[in-house]
Image (cartoon, rainbow, N blue to C red; front, side, top):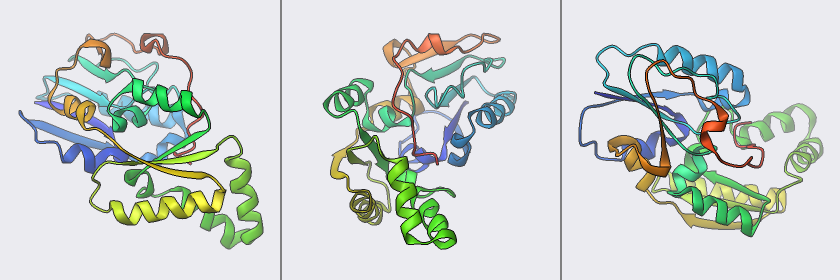
Length: 227
């Protein structure tokens, strides 16, 4: 049995991968990205539960350093070598790096990012309802000041057309260039079925501790998707 602990942002995409062996999914709230320490504690608690499990695959990247300091449980722990879920949805870390080199101020979005309990639009509406339209737009403009375009990753999400419309609306609201790109399932398929080796995964033996240096990747732009 493989236990996959994943962010709910990738729920639909991971569940769509046909499993070639027994798999158990545990999904973690995307809202915890706002507090890396809380996310780390949630993951630590989940890693302690390994009864009847051969391995644990942590379908997270560094995620603001949240996975650093976690100890592998009594079975091998496999972790994608990525900053966050964006390269996983794109199918390659190198695709992500290429897009960032093309435009550093790129804000990535997918259907899953628009279905959590604290999405970008829900936060905008909360501020708007409390302080008014002008204040809400000003807050959003400040938050997204470093961004120049919004790139929506199509992943065949079951409610994708609705989310694409929301992404276009958000880009218009923020004055960002809007672009779409089809993601690739390759990395997600390997999270479910393996192989968990090569440059795409890190393997930690039971009891070993995950460190940020293990990932060997440069710092990324701040991830605002978890607001």
